[in-house]
Image (cartoon, rainbow, N blue to C red; front, side, top):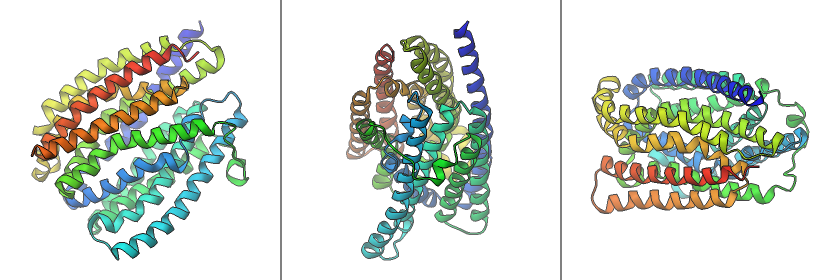
Amino acid sequence: MSRPRGQSGARRGVAVIVSGTLVAQLLVLAAYPILTRVFTAAEFGAYALVYAVANLFFPLAALRVDALVPLPRSEDEAIDLVGFGLRAAAGVGLLGTAVVLLVQAWLFGGGEGSWRWLWAAVPLTALVAAFQVVNAWAIRRGRFGAIARRSVLQAAVMVSIQVAAGLGGAVAGGLLAGLSVAFVVSIVALVVGSGLPREVLTLRRGDLHGRAGAAASLSLAGVLNGAGLQAPVLLVSAFFGLGAAGQFALAQQAIAVPAALVGQAVSQVFLSRLSAHVRETGESGRTIFLAATRPLLLLAVPAGLAALLLAPAVFPIVFGDAWRVSGEMVAALSVSLAAQLVGAPLSQTLIVAGAARTQLAWDASRVVAVVASLVLADLAGASATGAVWCYSLVNAASYVVGWVLAYRASSRTG
């Protein structure tokens, strides 16, 4: 009887997070036809560049403590991990911002284009790290309702500020301001909604409890994983300019809708259920792994086909003719999207199985493959869209390999 109840709880968790994420993504999509008409592709490119840097380095800010929080049997140990992660993120944010501002002023003066806002990557990195740590606590506690409400609130705050800034004549800074304030609000909402003990915020409490080695490995793996995800934005910007990076950023935002609805929701519930199963029974998690794979496959194929066939025609109508290239890039990303919808949520299995080295090796190989695909495409004289096709095919192959590794690791979770 325990298995059906577990499956029912998982379904409810997925349903709650999916509903919140759906509303959040609809809010973001509703704002984009406005944002794409008040911000230029280059301004989107600068915004995407800064956010890519933040997502690349946030694992270092808190040593990927967020990946460790759901694992300990002891609540006190988990709380200590949360406290450590929050203080580490705060320290990196305060010290790092000061250092980067000084260096940027010395090397570039006021800076132009993307350089003007590059300093913002450091506090944004700290905010992303703190958010991930608090969100991990909510996952551990099974507070899926709080996670869903946070998704809606974060989207509403972000797009409200961004639209207001755009209509007021702001440039990329308006996009970054909306994103940053939204993360602050989300962190506060999760602290309240997840029941995080106040002592974590008021006392000097925080200890890795002998998990420093795992934290270091996961941090490096997190940076490599981020490099695999963010390298396309950075390289498209370097090879084809901020305008092309802006087009690619909008394409990624469109792809993020199904990825968030399916991948993020399933991964959080899957991690919570698999971790609890291992803690409480000590048995293999392969049955849970395969049960999660089947519905992901059924969703991935139609999502990929929709992106391939519909995006090139729909994008100029919805976002304006200036964003036609984004629709073509979404079609190129369709293969990567389908593979990501299956592989990304289940990659959490490697963490639960304690296979940090396997995770590190996979992340490292994916970075090399992704970077190589874009560099070779540029050397071959491919267009920005052609380079995205190359990236998409290579990225899809890497997720297939990741699924195989996670499947093998699922038998060792016990």
